[in-house]
Image (cartoon, rainbow, N blue to C red; front, side):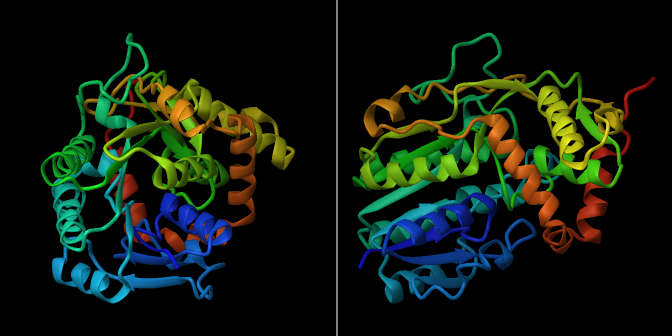
Length: 348
């Protein structure tokens, strides 16, 4: 039986990936997660009793613990989702990002190299390319020009992985995904944050003019692409994962307001009137855009869920799972949120 190690498995995207693996294969999944603020066991509540899911609580920077897991479980492949991933947090304090995203990746690479793992898939982000405003969609071989400490830490991890492929012949594959959204996303990210704030009749903070452009990828499309890359991707290759359609942040927020109004039988102005423009984030990239021709050509993958359908499903999930939102947020999170946006209101 195939055994794979999934790091950060209790997080948003990785929990969907584990659920996909358990539903479509007979693989054993070894889930290593530190259970930080953004990852929790409730994300996998429906599969915790599955005998093919084995959970270890621990940090990927702990080389002895990681080595013990490899010796005990003997995974043939590694999929590294474990990461600090919120840009705003990286601006406030970048230290955890450097530790987890760079040093943690190094630990995994070293142990996997020593154990001669057959595949090591690194999950990365479109943010490593930097701002694409006025430029063609970014290709996998384009230069990396990250703007934030978060993006820099992920770019560093990517380069480290590629160096292990070049130097040691390690079987590395890298995927770089567009902005994800969907059920179980921690409400510090744009879409769940706006849903949560709107439902509590709180202001909807919009950085700058709100015209920053992003490609929005439904999480179930993303994990299907990652599985395709793991199973059929070429060793040493990088695959961009996206829809090829850009939307402004303001358009996304307005659409959330409209869909919430539709779902709750309210006037859309009730929610749109909550929009409040704030000072822009330092170093905020205006546009991310990915060229996805490689994954379409080599793996036959393309996104299947339209933004309107995916967003409507996501909103309905949050409406039906408000207890989950309350369980994953806390006084500490509320304090953090208030600190981030304090003093950022635009002068009227």
